[in-house]
Image 1 (tube, one colour):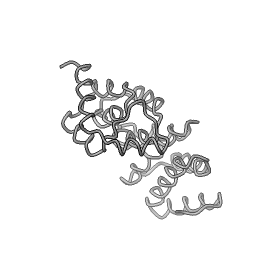
Image 2 (cartoon, one colour):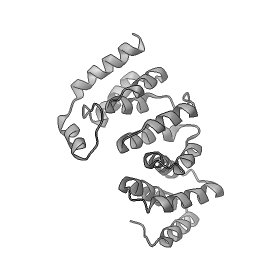
Image 3 (tube, rainbow, N blue to C red):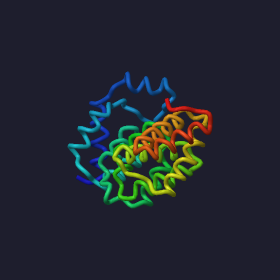
Image 4 (cartoon, one colour):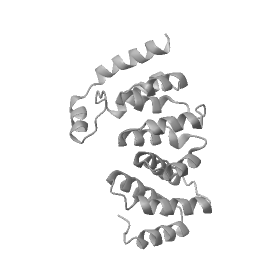
Length: 204
């Protein structure tokens, strides 16, 4: 079966996973995908496990302007095969908070160059790109990956700006990241508390 046929078959399988309540709830929250079947994440994870890692199929699925295709693409893309340039294109094309979260969780945190990209994304003018950066760093900090001195300074500087953003999702992503950063050890805790206090905030 060629890639186009596989994509078609996968898209047909989404009909069986359709959940109108979830799709409607997303629309009510202002999340508008070109096409959204409302499939739950566990159902998509089952589908991803059935397919296995597949670079070409992930590339083809990502091109579809369908919520489930994009999420599935992040689940089946092999992190050790994808080039930084491809990831840059994907990040530029992310246009929903859910996709940013899923891409960071399913794929970006596992990339060999995850930390490097995450710090680049923090400096982006795009809120969703910054969110990808914070979500990835949150996962890396949870896995006890400590930043170097330059990384610490970059992270703190960018996080202070993000914590004052009018975008609630970005503020939440940055705060979650700062919390995980503070759990890396006493020195990190002091840096985080001092930084957050400097803008008149406290840990949630």
